[in-house]
Image 1 (cartoon, chains in turn orange, brown, cyan, yellow):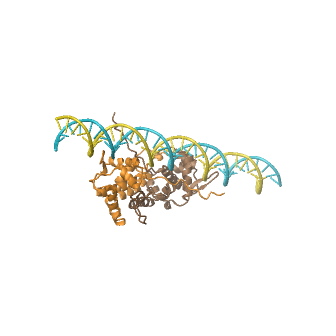
Image 2 (cartoon, chains in turn yellow, green, orange, red):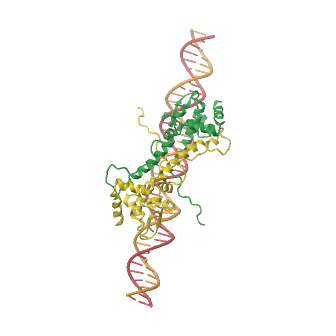
Image 3 (tube, each protein chain N blue to C red):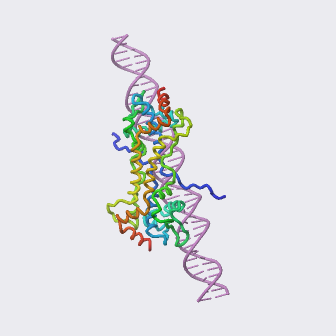
Length: 168
Length: 168
DNA sequence: GTTTTAGTACTCGGATAGGCCGTGTCCGAGTGCATCTGG
DNA sequence: CCAGATGCACTCGGACACGGCCTATCCGAGTACTAAAAC
């Protein structure tokens, strides 16, 4: 029997799904406004997510200075600054970390083929770095306010519905 | 003792190091030329890498049609087409797979905040898709021949040294 | 009635387990070469 | 000497373990509100 269905190991380089959670949560925080704080539990309930784990992601945002956290009753999270000055690059960096996806292991300096120890940069690393720079640049060009505008255009009732649900 | 050193979980979204291996190996294949095949064992020895695992990566390249493999004595791998028509995007896709790094889980359709089931695309997914498109576009703009030119400029003796080592 | 004070419920915060995928290794199928043998 | 058959060594190819990181969860520290009690 020939092996027709055989999928290679194709699922590498996955971004943490916490990024999607973070962006959606920040949208809700922006719609709610700075006067009211939303708790991790409530945000998790809105999207049917594990509350404790979402809390972990929000903590990362707090450490990055994107949101502020207040403990105790009537506490929760709120945006630390206007939505126009929060970019997708900020959010991705806060969750995924500042490390680039491609890390040059400098294999060119290992084994018999080792090049002389000079200060030249690996050509592969350079090319990959350029690509990743383009990626981050594109992310930095999209602010949270831009996403809000897009949602206002594609699903105009979503913000009001969220506001209403979180108000209760 | 206060915990001064505390790093958050910052190591996400890592690209497989097999990509770096693949690119360097393809460079050597290009320098060697299509007349001679290089075995996985020999390529691994050149960079002091685990031979069997490198073989696995080269198999992925073979499946993608980037290299051709010939079994038996005097067998090995060689480039399937000229270096100018092999882009970094091809290599990354061959190793990492065609799936994008960001996969929208559509959490906006879950829980009480679920939007109506329409055909609109998630705004977050759109923005992330744009960024990843820019990344892939930059990768597609760099061919293997461009990398060879860069190496010729920064380390002019590397190609000849490789040719000589692999010739023995 | 006002002020103080204790209690309580609720929130974030970090430390702690489980599962999946990348990393690494192994052995079998197939091929080309070299050698040996017969003409 | 030459042609054919045989054995062998070498290669890729896919199947099998191990470990690290993401996912998920739990309990403790801290705070604001509530309510009771004393003045």
